[in-house]
Length: 429
Image (cartoon, rainbow, N blue to C red; front, side, top):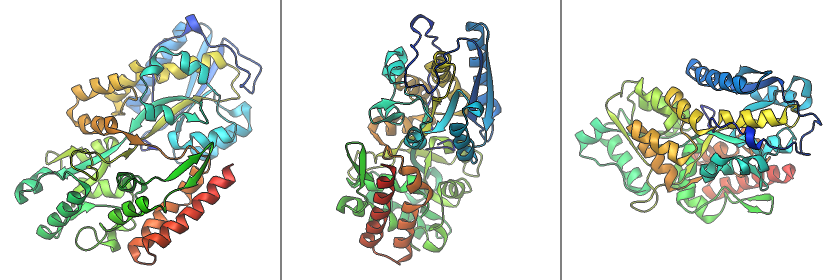
């Protein structure tokens, strides 16, 4: 999840002509066609632009549905877990429609909180243009539980002034990435070559995937860890080899997370960094403004792109809603093409529809490398309720840090991580 922003929208198309029928998968036997719809959306760092877009969607929705009022509340991302758990346990306090991180989907489905909207999503004319990975983020065991709101991916930021001075070119492979990083560090010891983080899980994943590794493999609806496979171990070794005095000293970088790496790059302390489309504003506000460019993170072979994690948020309907038809229609309006285009203009959130993304890239050049990354193929985390436990208990950062510190070999650390992941997958059912 890219809750920085984490991560998916869809836009203005009222389906009054083909309103979805009440489904037996709703926990309520009511489907009121008027009244108040409660909506929870995430509070952004700068929330006013987002709120203006949402207010416009809400105004149109209320105008089109006489007797209907939409009450939107913006909730802090950091406390969402407690709020959502309480809502699932107490329908009276629950919203009808809710924004949630895409890595939370499987857990929320397991907890019985989200409404199955498979039929509605399939009948929605705009859904056919949804990015496949975005659609995967709302799908659990073949059923759809929401609509993608926006997507976030990472690419390679690099200092154009430093590269020009040293006669360097953007790396074409991951091997070149490592050698270029060391060249920068050697020539300019005050800079990290490529700033990396031992707690930067989503920055490390592309190395595993580019090496042919996977986080886990699916067997029916269950998962088995693959983090200790030979291919995954190769990727782990490539990533952890970047922690050293010749690039990014372990004493400093082992504890870095994604925000730390972007902050270091924005402050002019690194030649390169792996950052998201959602990092653009922070970099623009830093001392490197006008002195950087972005390219897709290269893969194992020249011309390839390392698979990126597709983060982002979704919007879904709660199973406890007493306004099923209206709630589904509002979900679609909040995530429609028109809304996604407006939200990109307002917040820089990448649309989940290819045609809308292409329009955004034509309008804003900085979007192009992220669109190229998406087009090359992205990856997602296992659609298991166990993933939230794996993520929150820092299984992968612990693995990376044990290797970086020299406490464990790649084989030993990945083997231990695999055991923890399998336990989490097993407990999730």
